[in-house]
Length: 263
Image 1 (tube, rainbow, N blue to C red):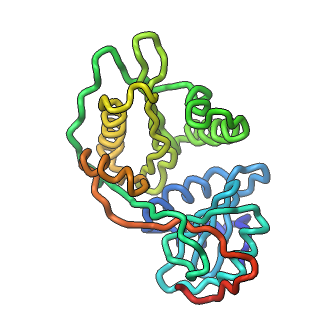
Image 2 (image 1 turned 60 degrees about the vertical axis):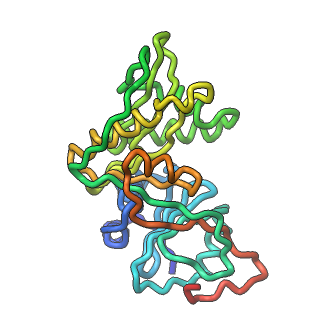
Image 3 (image 1 turned 90 degrees about the vertical axis):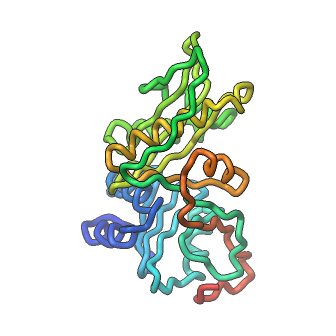
């Protein structure tokens, strides 16, 4: 049975399900701390036998224990009702759930340090960038997503669950950004790296990513992020280590029998 997290028992169940699961322990741990009991929260948390589920807009994250046996048919119906289109999970659903893409988890261990690529002359790091400017850069032409991202990120930053950096040029214009948008449970999950199109290929993004990762690792965090296959060479070159592979799946067709077995 899928149940909303709204009490201490639910919080404990989520914490137990995500313990030791990279990416999920940071992201769902942050959401557990920030949004539980908030009816207007951008992310809703749920428990199911042997696992924890987070729903945010059209996406969801599912973290299952190795021996968990979820009711995949119930889950599909629930997610469809919630308006979810894609599910990131640490376990493979039945074959009726189409694989949208593999997501590769890269990491830098606590205390680790990577060689820092040089920052081109005339650029400098901004440690308190405008989240409005970042939201507009990441989601151009999508005002609703900009507003949601801005609100969620500001809340996480103000409560110590996120850290965001940018690179500015001499005119004070932002040309690159990356953030650790979920810092929780000894892990810092990095995401939303973006460099202005006309300046890509000059090492700006690599410098900023490594600078933030080194900073967080020096503080004792395990630094992680997910990427698609086409970006793996970039992070391999920077020195990050591929540790796990998760999957992002689409919901099965309604007329298919999702079944209860793990495919």
